[in-house]
Structures are given as C-alpha cells and as structure tokens.
View 1 (cartoon, rainbow, N blue to C red):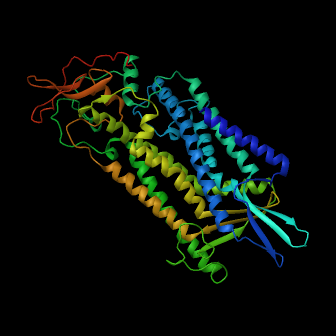
View 2: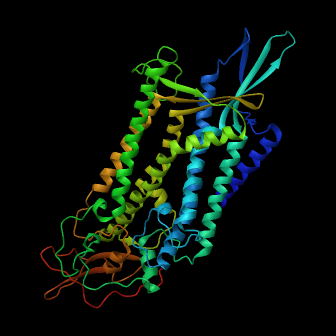
Amino acid sequence: MACSSIFSCSCIITGIVTLASHGIMGVTPLSMGINPLLEDNGMFYAYEYPRLSLQAEILTLMLDLIITLCTESIGFVHGISLRSALASESRLRFNTNLRLLTAARGWHNPNGALLNGISIVLLIVSYSSPSLIVCVDQQTQYTVDGDTMGSASAAIAGLPLLILGVTLLLQVIIALSAMRAIKILTWSSSPFDLTAALVHHTQLTPATFRCMRRVSDLDTYGGPAKPPETQPSAWHAHPSIRKVVIFLWVIVAACAGWAVLVMYIWDRLFMGRIASPLTLQTWTFFQNSDGNYITYGVPNDGIEWWILLFVNIAVVQGPLTLGLHCSELIVNVIRDERQWRCATRRQGLRVATNPLKPIFTHPLCLILFIAKPFLHWMFGLSSNIGTYAIDDTLNDFSISMFTAQIWNLCIALFILACFFTVVALLRPHGPQPAAYGHLQTLANLVDEWSPVMWWGHKEDGIPYCHAGTSDHLLPDVKMDCVYAGSGAGSLVPRALS
C-alpha cells in the first residue's frame, strides 16, 4: 500500500509538472533511446523508429507490471476488509469472494455496492492508461548548413499519467477507508486462520456428525457417511466459479468477433487503400505497418479528446480487466483447497503463514499475476493509440486496430480460458472431504487446532468412526467404515502463533 501511494503521488506530480510546462497536450521526453532523424524533401525519415517503437512497448509493459503490483497490493487490503465486513453481517461463506462484485450492506460502506462500482471503474481506467501514456516525441533542430536535423525519443504524456496517479490514489483511499471501517479479524489469507478467528469469536459454530461431509453436501442431511474415493470439483462446489468460467469464454468469443469485425471493415472500406490482407507472411506478434489493420483519426481538441479516448478504450478493455479480476476467484479457491489437502501429507498443514507467501509461491497465483500485465499489454498491441508529439506537444492522433494482434490476443485468452476451465473441473482424489475454503465445512472438519495439523482416522467406534485433525500424523481413514464424528463437537481453537 505504501509503495502504491508513493507511485501514485509520483505520477500525479510528474503529470502536473508536464501539464504546467507544456499544456494539456504536453509530453515529457525521456533521455533514453534518443534516435537521430534526417529531413529529406521536407519529410523526416525515422530510420530508428522500429527500435524506438520497441522501446515504447517495453516501457508500456513495465508500466502494466507496476500497475499490477499496485492494484494487487490494494486488492489484498480491500479483500481482507471485505471478509471482515461480511463476517460482521453473518454473510461470509467462503474465504475467497469476488472482491469487487460482492458488497457489504450500506451505500456509504467502503465495502458497499457504490464504492465497489467506483473501484471497478478505477481499476479499468488504471489498466487503460499505459497505452496512452507512452508515445514518441520528435525534436527538430536547424543546422548551420540549412539542413534540418531532428531526433526522436520515447516520452510520457502528462494528462494520462496524472489520471493514472489519481485512479491509483483513489483506490488506495477506498481500501484504507474499508480497513478503518471494520475490525479486521485476521490479516492472514489462510482460510484456517480465518476459520479459527470466527470460531474463537463465536461467529461460526462447528456442526456435529459432519466429519466426512464435504462442501457439496451442505444441502443434504448431514448424517453418517462413508469416505468417498473422489471429491467434487471447484465447478460444482463453488457457485460463482461457474459464472467466472462462462464469462472468460464470453470474452474469448467477443475477442474473436472483434477480429472478424475488423477484417470485415477492412474488406469493405480499406481494401486496396491501406495495409495488406491477413496472411501467414503478414502475421506477426508486434504491430506491422504491412499487416492487416484499420485506422481512423481522432480530433485533438483538448480535454474532450482525452475523455473520448479514455471512454473508448475503457469500454473495449473493461471486459478483459473484469475477467482477469474475476479469475482471482478460481485461483484463490484452488489455492485454499490445496492448502487443506496438505493435512494428509507427511509435512502436514501449517495454519499460520505469511499473508503474501501463498501469492508469490503458488503456481496458479504466479500464472495469473504474469497473465494480467501481459494480456493488457497484448490488448495495447491490438488496439494501438497513435500518439506522436513534436517538440513536446502531441499533434497527431489515430486509433489503429491490427487484425493479427487481435487474433494473438484471442489465442492467448483461449489458452487462459481452457486452463482455468480444466483447473475448475479437476476433481481431487482421496477420501479427505473437499472444502474449497468454505468456512463452515472447515469448522466441521477441524476438531483440534494446532499450528501444524494432520487429518485422518482418529477413533474406531460402533457403529460410527471418527475422523478429524491432530497435532501429529494420523493413519488413513478406513474406506469401508462409516464416519459421523465423535459427537462432542469441535474444540474452540486457541490462539495460534
């Protein structure tokens, strides 16, 4: 949060200085990568523009990565406060929720529907800004011989940078307000720390006779049960998982439709005028002036142009940003379940962990963390905002949509959707009841709390056996026995260190 605040304030200060020095269309050139240009018959030939464009794209990717780091840290604080707010209203069911699509009661609540909606808009604008911030700035000079010489370098536009700083700072303020508005139960992202805190504060009561009941058995009579050989998938266990997976496939279909629409418009309006048909020879990863694309100009009339451009990009990029945000639900639910299944392994389940450790050590978390900036960057390659400045002032604006790059984005989204679909449909093997971070299920399954826990067979009985947790390694449950619990209820967890 501190780093996010510092970065947002830096963007605001730099943007204000640029606006004060060069006006609303002003840019600040960067000293890196100054490339010489030579005028020939009144035209500048940018011999180094391919390299300069690559530098600009690298800067854009770095900016997307920084924005991801900032929004993830903000989202962590906001998500922790949302859990506590839902718990105080007795509405918390799972450890992981759709952060910006799940609201606490009250319009003025920092975790309420109004500020959640504002946070969604701010998140979309944050990821829409990098493609507008980085541009090419051309400087002209006159030599003694009368020949016009010039140079070009990457630059940052003042107003989009200011807007990025403001959106990030507002997200920080909302997250801090949410944190101060509610008493935080625990800062841990572990479902076990949260379950222990809820049981300790009597906000969650373990149910008896459900030691072999998984999360999908919530709607059934919680009586005795034999250990199953396989467990339900996240698709069947968590109702919101299905909606997220379907939404990801809708985004893939929309991206494919976008590519087809661009090809249709080019065929009707631009064939023979600009670009070439889409072929394997013109299909590249980066933008290619010889490839297939359409372009249209936008008037540079000041602040109105910036507003129109931001709205244009945000509307198109919004579903991508929202889809990647919702994908966090799949990743975190699977992470919670895999942590629970450590209880049957030799090393056991460690309840208390560093809040940030699972985010940077779990493979699914890393994949999504890398996918967010990369896919937003690929979107920028698909829909290029042609912003070129001369002498620190923007004066050429155009929006180009590159067919090959849109298909590249569609392929990447297709792979991501396939990956998360498979992950959501996988069924864990073994008799250990699946919980997927469902807090009531975990409270029913964990009957003895300790910093390191194991789950397995605890007691033989007639007619029912008992399975639960312990601070030492337990034997496997007996597949031919019926389990119902000890009937004594779960122990209230002591403070975990």
